[in-house]
Length: 172
Image (cartoon, rainbow, N blue to C red; front, side):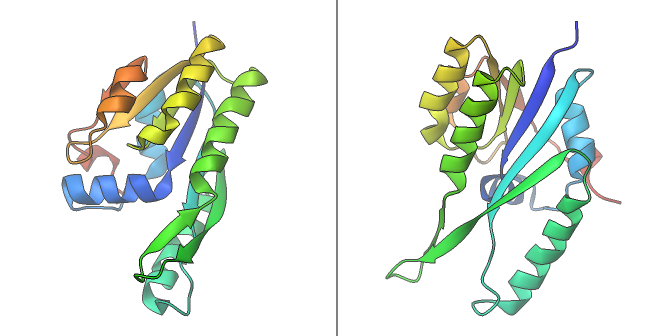
């Protein structure tokens, strides 16, 4: 029996995980999500990120905007953009991204939109939200990459999908 799937992508986490693991970032999201969802009913892909300020780094901003344009063309993909805030040490922190992902994870579960949540992140802050959706009878799968494994997510999720090679998912 086909299960309804929603994929939740922590964009920055995903980018850094594949870059650290494979030294490549040109993943074809459609191919990748098709592999993850198998023969199940993909409802929507929820992608969360934060936009780079063009005045901070124009070249990186242009690259990111090109990527966001690409994502906006992917069928059934909803792109949510939080914001980047500068810290005193010039480090930038995403704001509103993880909270929005957790809220959507819970809200869509409460409204019975999916049976399985596939979470692409290695952020253990999502553990309480995952436990709550499991209490609602939903399953949570975590996607794991070689360089960025997350013990806490792997432990709480119903299944861990290990990605050891992305060559089949690269854009041509």
